[in-house]
Length: 118
Length: 112
Image (tube, rainbow over all chains, first blue to last red; front, side, top):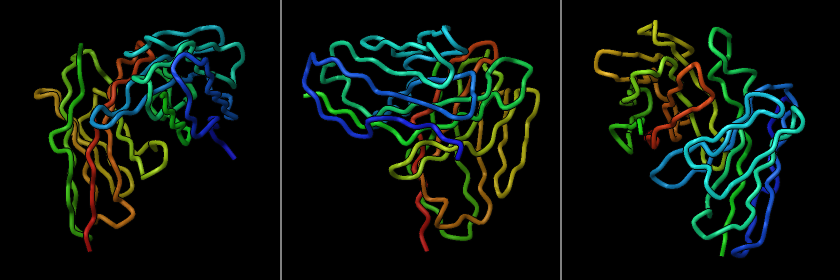
């Protein structure tokens, strides 16, 4: 089954304790990205990756790191989590997003990871 | 920065009626627009998209309209069903970049 898998789905942690949220897709997609969802603010893009070893900042990258060492995985790293990073996080992937190609808008989302930082 | 916004946070629709969800965008460089549906406890799902060289696109029970003059996007759902109850997001993208911008979302509630 084609899917985007995030882990963990739920996590409660404390300020300053490094954590990683993993994301894996089995669709051979080139593009992957991370979003956070907060009430009234919709989805805000944290980081995205157009392909292996290529990552770029989204609108809210502060406090986050990512890596794309292989095509299927795109982990989100919080080096020193703070309470304002309490949120619902979504990973998404797409076949490609470059101009002139098909399927440039169909993002496939994971089920979400709810993170609470105390 | 540029932003994508929605006119109504909540839309209550009677089952069988048509729904119209509106979205305003402000980035004139955006040339690709997408609608997503998010059911409770799930990730957003793609519904339909439209490029800036089009003003209308139809899918199964859904139609997206794009008015570039007033920078307005709408999603029409025909014969709304209980399964259409969800939060709907519009999103925009400049096709030369990988950045997506989403609106705040509209909660659609379908009443019997």
